[in-house]
Amino acid sequence: MQYRVDISSKALSIRDMVYETLKEAILSGTIAQGSHLKERDIAQSFSVSTTPVKEALRRLDQEGLVITKPRIGTFVSNKIMSSIEEISWARSALEGVAARLAAIKISDQEITELEEHMEKIKKATQEDNGALLYELNEAYHNKILDIAQNDYIVQQINAVRAFDRAVRKQALSDSQELERAYKEHYLVFEKIMQRDPDGAEEAMRNHIRRTASFVMEKQ
Image 1 (cartoon, helix red, strand yellow):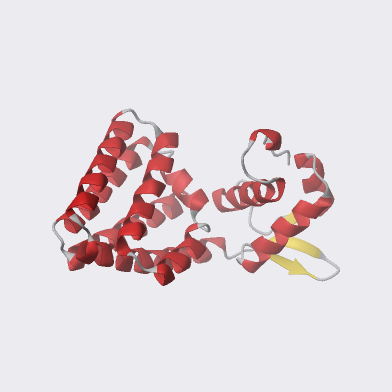
Image 2 (cartoon, rainbow, N blue to C red; image 1 turned 60 degrees about the vertical axis):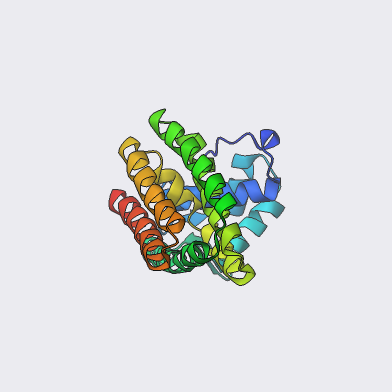
């Protein structure tokens, strides 16, 4: 398989680019479950040495996306979909708590700033700009984390959010999903603005779980 990525044009390091590209290919199904991942073949596809490939496969192994068998090789896990579902449960619970904390702690100034960001998301949604929405939506979730002011929750969310990056990209590739995502993001914002901790937590949990279910149904 040839990976069409111009590594030199990316801000990420070569190691991170190989890792992110392989992860997205695995989660999207471009690389099928059970596939044998050969280091030299992957290195040739990326036009890199085997060193960043080895590191990428090691990280993917730690995340449960691949399985390394001594003296045999590395293979894509056959349990990808259950892993996605379980990670989504964890993320929905963590981000739900973050939304709850944000609803408790948010200041009037932060409400204004979050509202302004929602306007940017609305405009990008109307323009059907999935690439921009990917960035704006991630920034939206980060703003809620900033308002929540809990370093432990931030660390835990960052650990699982990196896993589902490819899942979110798939979701935003669907034009109908863009509108659904906007409505759900606005509901979370509305509950936080109203300083409704229970409502904010429930809205965030439901948003993340529904998005994951949508992507899994497309597989």
